[in-house]
Length: 381
Image (cartoon, rainbow, N blue to C red; front, side, top):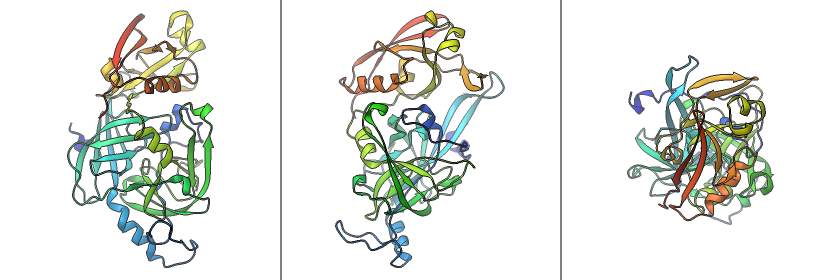
């Protein structure tokens, strides 16, 4: 079955509570934000009048200027375990993204593409093009794609702006594909700035931009625009009791996205899983009940796939926790034990300190045997 034949369904947004940064649960929450003030784009330094002043058509002027940079991101993940044990299926996903360069770089949310086997981008004129994941940080929920091929002439890349200049109360504009309805516009305000300390995140000081703009399933990974038509955030998730928009949406600030995706070496792990410890670790026969990371899904062509890691095959519910069994259990990476809550942060920080192409060692448990795997960090593009 070809990718274009199956990319027609939407992922479902779970009823979500705001997760801690650094928790893999962040990657399961969805939404999209693209925000910009009510007035037409003006030169840097120009005075913007109150959001309640000015003609409504100025929003249309902003939208006309930025809309070609906004794309729909469609994904396919094969071999996903179904409810019927042993029955493979295909998982489809829909999100949004924004083109930020003429050479085809696209920013989106990590939870949209992190474990995808195939990624396809749809432009505003309906043109489709394959893309590949270059870098992904599931802890921060940001990812970078690159088109396979050239950018269509009809697309004007967006400018990545400075989120530090935003003030609470600034009007913002959201463009994305809620429920698959491409290039949908919503308008709101910057409701708050939420900072998570470096001690919790482990790499950079993490910042989320909160908005009351309506965002829903399919908006994930879309851009947040300011009054200068510049991208100031990448939509991450919503806080919702109903499963739909309730005026609490969150985007990763452009400052954080720039540092993680453009200023650091590209890393795409391409795996998802769960930390196991205590009784579950003993039940899975880890050495001396050692904690580890149970691999549940591995994306093709990712660093995890090149390393030879294997995902799970048997869905189960243990103690009210959904889990997929049968995959490798990672015990340590470069000597870093994987049972600690901050293990993933430590591993990424360690990798960032290594030259591109460097070898690294991973110790795993597979089928009752302990194996040592050797992988190599990607070379810089």
